Image (cartoon, rainbow, N blue to C red):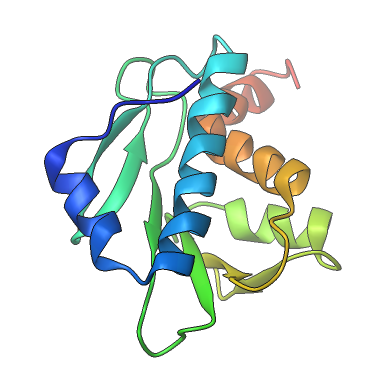
Amino acid sequence: MKQTISKDVKSVFDSFPTDAKEKLLKIRQLIFNAAAEDNAIGTVTETLKWGEPAYLTDETGSGSTIRLGYKDKTPDSVDIYFNCQTTLIKDIKQKYADELVCENNRLIRIPIAEALPTDTLSDCLTMALKYHYNKKARDSGLL
């Protein structure tokens, strides 16, 4: 499912080098695909936070914000940022330590030249988009 992109968000993507932009747009599409496949997530809102594309679950409140970024100081990779106050990176490290490069409690770094680990990333993005939903279910004993 292809999503319309706002002029402001598009201009940020357009500011990235072509290979970084292509990789980030693929990750963007994985976010929207995850939402389309799970009714608990609801509609994803795309906006800018700190000048970077950000994805929120405003409709349901089911998830934690995801941001996508590219930094000149790490030109061979793109980043997926998560709220550092969550356990998302800890959980992702436990599950995918051999597959993903995670830094601190903040981000997943994706090498631009390597194939996108689509299934793994889809799971990680779904974890973020359902972070509050799953936490409520765990706290109430449903998970």
